[in-house]
Image (tube, rainbow, N blue to C red):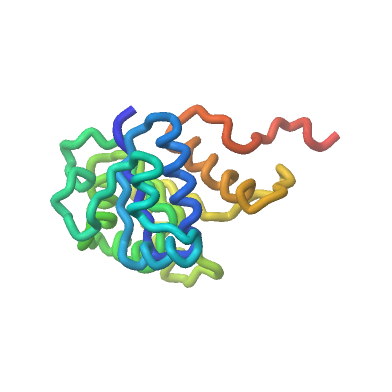
Length: 190
C-alpha cells in the first residue's frame, strides 16, 4: 500500500483524524499528516494535543498546509488515498468549487483528477443545503462521503467505541483489513 494523506480541517471531530492516524501507523502504513490552522485549534481544544505531538507519537510525516508543492499534492506521487477527517464546511465548499488553495484542498483535488480514493468525513449538524450540494458534487465526482455518524447497533460503551465505528468505515473504504470495532453479522436480532 502506498501512502495515505490524512487531512484534519477545522470541523469538530478532530479525534476521528487523530485515531485514524494512530491506527494506520500502528499497521506501518505511511501517513502524510496535514492540519489546517483551524484544525490545529480544534485538535488543541478537543484532544488537548498538537499536530506535532501526533506526528511524533505515531511516526506520521507532518506536512505544512501552506506548502502546495508538498508530495501530498503531486499527481505523480505514490499516494493511495486522501482522507479529510474531519472535513469542515469551508473545505467542502472549496472542493465543490474546485479550489485548491492549501495543501489539504490541493491534495483532494489532485486525488479527484488522478482517480485516487478521496474520502471526506464531514462533521456538521445540521447540514446546510450548500453542504449537501457540495457533498453531492464530490460524490458524483468519485469521492466517498462518510459522515462522522457513529452507529449504535454495536452497543458502544465509550466515546472511543463511537470514534472507532466511524474510523472502521474509513478503513473499509481505504481497503484495509482490520479488526477495529465490530461488524454486523445478521445474527444480532433473533
